[in-house]
Image 1 (cartoon, rainbow, N blue to C red):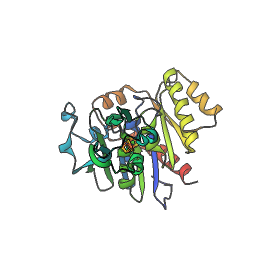
Image 2: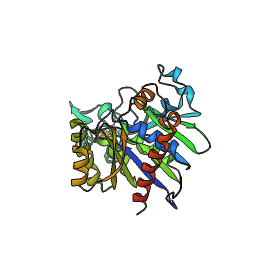
Image 3: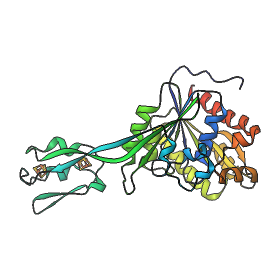
Image 4: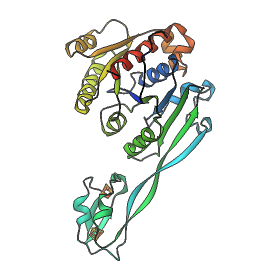
Length: 301
Ligand code: SF4
Ligand code: SF4
């Protein structure tokens, strides 16, 4: 593409949405493939990573764990406390300092709820009796795949029933964002995992759909990004021209409209088969490339 934005430092573009099902991952993947740039694509939707599905043979879609698709897999662990009742004097300081209610005192002894622990390590440091020892707990894994000469994919996958996604998301971004352009596919919503995926980003692309639900969740996502002080723009996906309130909202709020992806039966069919839009409809390459370049031009300002 002509007039590519010049990037002379590491740049992170996060693709987020206030709700699931807006096509966020599809936008991230198609942008990454549409432009002629070296890109690290990080799928940080660690409870349900699905970027890799777009790159696989569609025949494999039913078995979507797909570890065998990746070139390398590493386990990811966090530290959680282990208590020694023989050393504990029942002072309760560990309960007091834990802001996540992961420790309670029963009969003057700590009772630990591992599901609530956020591995903040505060309790490790305050036990004067040496009754708390950090131990490793494996909560998920990080998978990597070289898609082609220009694109590498990294995703994280959290173990079933684990709730500690932010440490895994932060680890992926810190270790694998690289020194060039990185596109982060964030989890949907506006809670802690989204903040973990977005807080270090240079720019955010919010993908929404032109429905009342889409607009409602877009407003929540906008609030979150404004609190995080991250610059952002909006992409309207599946636009059929019928619901102009999203456009109006963006105009009223002076939010950059980065692009509009039309509602098109051909796009829906490609998406439902796990296909890549810019490969099957080459004329769409220009649209996704322009969305990314527009975001980059805002990011480098
Ligand atoms: S801080 Fe240490 S000594 Fe005090 S209750 Fe907790 S584990 Fe026991
Ligand atoms: S590591 Fe942090 S979150 Fe976990 S139990 Fe200790 S104080 Fe609570």
